[in-house]
Each structure stands twice: as structure tokens, then as C-alpha cells.
Amino acid sequence: MRLLWELLVLQSFMVCLADDNTLHGPVFLQEPSSMIFPLDSEEKKVKLNCEVKGNPRPTVGWKLNGTNIDIGMDYRYSAVEGNLLINNPNKTQDSGTYQCVATNPFGRIVSREAKLQFAYLENFKTRTRSTVSVRQGQGMVLLCGPPPHSGELTYAWIFNEYPSFVHQDNRRFVSQETGNLYIAKVEASDVGNYTCVVTNTVTNSRVLGPPNPTHPQERWGDGGV
Ligand SMILES: *[C@@H]1O[C@H](CO)[C@@H](O)[C@H](O)[C@H]1NC(C)=O
Ligand SMILES: *[C@@H]1O[C@H](CO)[C@@H](O)[C@H](O)[C@H]1NC(C)=O
Ligand SMILES: *[C@@H]1O[C@H](CO)[C@@H](O)[C@H](O)[C@H]1NC(C)=O
Image (cartoon, rainbow, N blue to C red; front, side):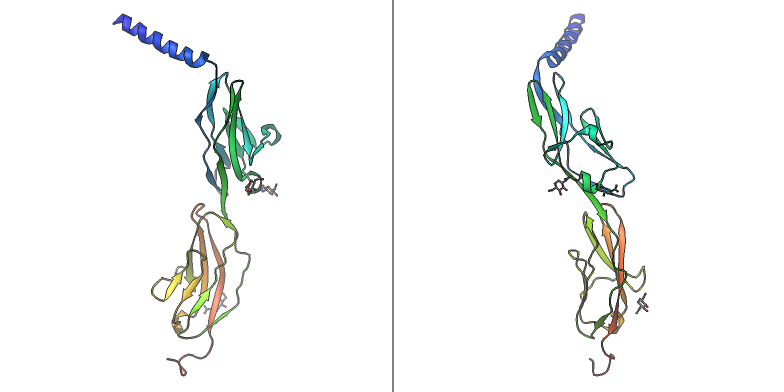
């Protein structure tokens, strides 16, 4: 029993020795992953992971869009055991493709590409939209025209006042591609103010468009249906 125990200890010691003492080029234990960072998030920090082993211990550097990052040049950067930390990440300065590069005298390896993107949703610039004339029995389209954004959006429309939403049915349709609202065979009860509601599914932020007033083009009922 004692012998077995000693053997085990000896064996693991030798495995350790082999691992530490055999000179070899860098090998990745973890490579960075692509991520989408919500700009309005509480955590003002992005961490790109890179874990390597090698003997001698490899030095790890980073590339952004193929250009070496000089970590000392920007106070927002810090390197923690090969990982890259970016404080107060900035959409303009930091979005792009990252790779970590590990080097020792026995080799140099470059990681896969990790894309850093930012999710955001700006406010609508326009505060008013002109009145749309609608004709009874005809179709109408209201354009949403979402503000600048990144990240997937979903759309809904408020009819007159929150929380009265347009319910989709066989006459009403909200395009999840464009945000536009389509109403077929317009009825008197469809006349009112429509407001597009845009939600960013990544940041969970939501903005309201300007009201789109509609008014009947002619007096309804006269020679109508
Ligand atoms: C992000 O960087 C750009 C370009 O350097 C700068 O104009 C902008 O003010 C920065 N944004 C923030 C929130 O710091
Ligand atoms: C990196 O390249 C992407 C794609 O061409 C570009 O959108 C981004 O602005 C670049 N990033 C920087 C920091 O130059
Ligand atoms: C639409 O909104 C405008 C401005 O808020 C308001 O003056 C108008 O009365 C509204 N129209 C309807 C039909 O609610």
C-alpha cells in the first residue's frame, strides 16, 4: 500500500516535471470569443479571454483588425494573465476583430478571430410627422424609420395613447423587418395617432417614434360603402 502511494506521488511529480521542463511552443487553453456589448450596460468593462501554456511561459499580445495593440498606450487597456480588459469601451475605438498572439522562443500562435460589437439604440431625431390622409376602404402604410442602432430590433405601434397597442389581425400587420405598419380596408375607427415603439432585444432599451397623425381624406359615409 505504502509503495503504491509513493509510486503515485512519484508519477504525478514526473508528469509535472515533464509538463514544466519540456521546452515547447505555446498552446491555447482558451481562445477569445465574439461578443456583443450593450453600450448602456452597468458594467463598463469588456474582457477578452486568452489562456495559453508553453515553456518558457509565452508572452501574450493582442491585435485589433490585424494591427498590434500597444496596451501601454491607452489607459483603458489592461492585460491580466493574457486576457485583455477594456475599460469604458467605446463603439468607435473598440469595435472590430480581436486576436491574441502568444509567443515564446519555440513558436508563435495566433488565436481565432473574436468580433467585438456594440449594441445600442439611439433616440428618434424627428419629433413630428406630417398628417397622413386615409381613405375609407383603402390601405394605409405608416413608416417607422428606426433611429441608428446595432443589435436586433422588434417593433410595435401604439394607437392614440399608451397602453393601447395595435393588435395584428387580418387587416393589420407590423413588419418586423422595417417596423412599418400596414392597415388594409381602413375603417373610421382606424383614424388616430400612431406611434412606433422600437425595442432593442440585446440592450432591452426602448424608444418611441414621433406620433403619426392620420385624418380622413373626405367625409366618410357620403357615397362610401
Ligand atoms: C468614443 O470615441 C470617439 C472617437 O475617439 C469620441 O469622439 C467619443 O466621444 C467617444 N465616446 C465616448 C462615450 O467616450
Ligand atoms: C475594424 O474593422 C471593422 C470592419 O471593417 C470596422 O467597422 C471597425 O471600425 C474597425 N475598428 C477600428 C477600431 O478601426
Ligand atoms: C394626435 O396628436 C396630436 C399631437 O399630439 C394632437 O393634436 C391630435 O389631436 C391627436 N389626434 C388624435 C386623433 O388623437
